[in-house]
Image (cartoon, rainbow, N blue to C red):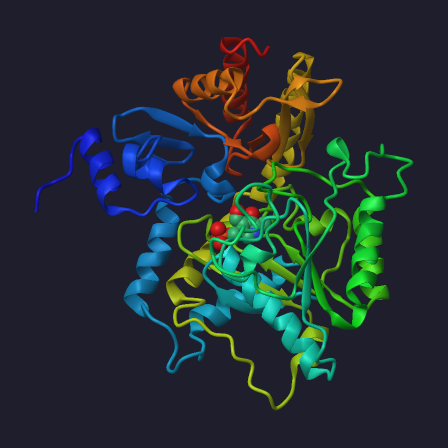
Length: 456
Ligand SMILES: Cc1ncc(COP(=O)(O)O)c(C=O)c1O
């Protein structure tokens, strides 16, 4: 077979053999992948096939929490591969690697969330949590409680189940291209003070966004609702942090109407916000917690749903709980995830996220002297900001505007990768091993790119 060696060949082979996602397939068929093809990455630095280097300002898909290509994780994987490379004795039976990981993970998760079901991806774990919620109520004799409520702007994945809970603007939820929508999913309002869906100003708004959940439950009928699922801090929408009172009120509403609270911490978990899990900022106690990205730092695919003992008790009964994936909780992934817990503790990476995150917040807040940079939000190494055409009216630039194209090109040319979210938010979320110097390098490039595109 011919060896693929030049940048041009990589691009043409990709065009011929891959099915691209998140883009129009007509433009893909014509032009192939737009953007760099990465060959190698170490720590925070990625190298493309043409030799150009980038610093990871958004940790891949905000998942490379512990840096790229770590030897300690590679060695943990190798050791487990050579010890036992596959699952337990029979389908669903655990290996020692999964049991060891689960018991260590229980010391890392918030108190009371110490029982786990392992899957591979965030979307899959969301699907599993909705099934758990439905099974729980069914088993308790409340067979009509099956609806899952999620919020506008939410991202919970793109598997067939999680896609209908995802409510980003644009392509999801889908508009018919994947057949009729699956019944049992309902929407409620976003919490987004900068662009309040009720045109109110915080404080003094009566937290209408939280009260909207109570209204949605009443409209649907509490006897039909199984769970409310939400990210504690919006991630894919561009790091949007709710006001202090929001989560305590949501917990009250879920209790009042007897529905389960599922927190999706796929992006915010594992130190991203300066605590092990973001719910700890509010001392918020969910009934289920979903995690994935930081578990292995994307070195291998792994996700989990953590449930409380109360949820487990509600599920106990004669009915078989049918949820299983042949390689869910794969021993090699669990061995790597166990090593991650060791590294987090040894290198104090949650503390690092909090400390270096304060520096990131300070540097980003200084950018607001620009007439175009607004609404900086940052917790740990998890930051988002708006690039506004006009700050007073909060008018965003269109993503295809000349200014944004120029800015994106400048960021790229200067060797930085950050995430552009819908509605003009920019997300900065470097690996949690980042130093103050790394943050300075990232924000220095942002400053220069703003200057290059006359947005400073
Ligand atoms: C909060 C949240 N949930 C679920 C997902 C989906 O995870 P995956 O891409 O692993 O399916 C993501 C991905 O960004 C996410 O941020």
